[in-house]
Length: 453
Image 1 (cartoon, rainbow, N blue to C red):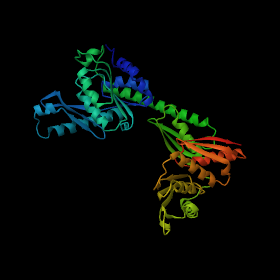
Image 2 (image 1 turned 90 degrees about the vertical axis):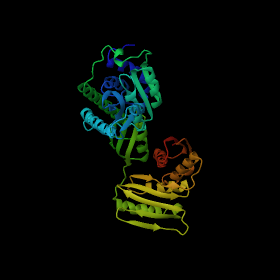
Image 3 (image 1 turned 180 degrees about the horizontal axis):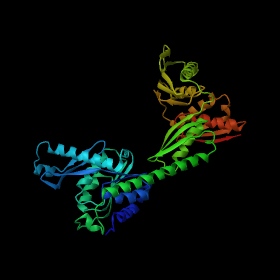
Image 4 (image 1 turned 45 degrees about the horizontal axis):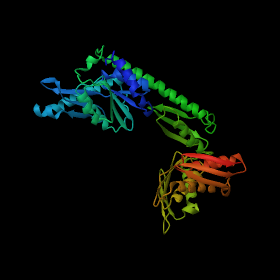
């Protein structure tokens, strides 16, 4: 197999790697020769492109003989060929000095290629590591070991051509090795290219900029798709509640306020289902009917928790910006509730005896006028084993707390985080209220509203 050039090799390799497209991969190239190959893969897979900067360390009296390699990044990695080091004694301190010199060159080259742009985050991602070929594999081994420390979800080596023995030696360093051609009579990478000219820094910079432009266009398209999906759902009502939508590296951030808790949860779920979205950063809050300052909201929250009959046996502790107050300490306390407010967002901490009491505290906080969100971090001493039954009971509790509803007319069940509502109500408003109440419960991932009017 002969490749016309690195571009041809990249396109052929991209066809084999197309199965990784839905994994939202990151493509990492070994510069400089690996960049033209990796660019074609990144473009075909609509994936971001970065480089794995590595410098070979040769013997001081024979630089072409690889003693090891150093890989840059937040946690630089030095890989040394112990056989060479033992056979060739080095001057004291030389290896450490040479490593620092090569790391300085790596930093210089990173700035040349990217300016101040930080490296892409790899943790939890599928990472495709690409070069134009592998001869000994020493450099690639150093790169793979360094990348493994960044905890990618899957580490894939991808090259057009490689020496069979070297390729086998690298398989243990990655989760999968993809190679188009590994000839038994391998001699040199360049022999398998019709055009194997040097790749200069100018070409590398140009390709990386083109990849960044393509990625930016892709992120803008994802933002457009998310906005269109939210506009198409009348429950979100973007006309009345405009949101800020941004995308970076497949992570969509939603910011703003919505009219109901149901709309807030549904907006995040709708965004997560859009193609190209890897995850959603939910920074949405409830738009309160009346805005209150944190001190007034904190006082109202204190009163709501204090006067909730189901929480009468709990110690209550208020944590304000300028004060801490022990609100109540029963003789035989069942647990502790610590509460605070910041920018209209309530935080609950402490420990409850039952899951029902934990939900009860959360519902009491949501019921306070001016509350924009509730972060319920409380733990439970004895959580019930049946999670579906727990969730159904929590939703029933929420329905009972709503003065606009007649909960005895409604049936609630839960399966796998989805709540099912059945029964009859007099009006569409009550039907919507019941669905919104269900979304107040932590862990609800969906609501199937089968209530009839």
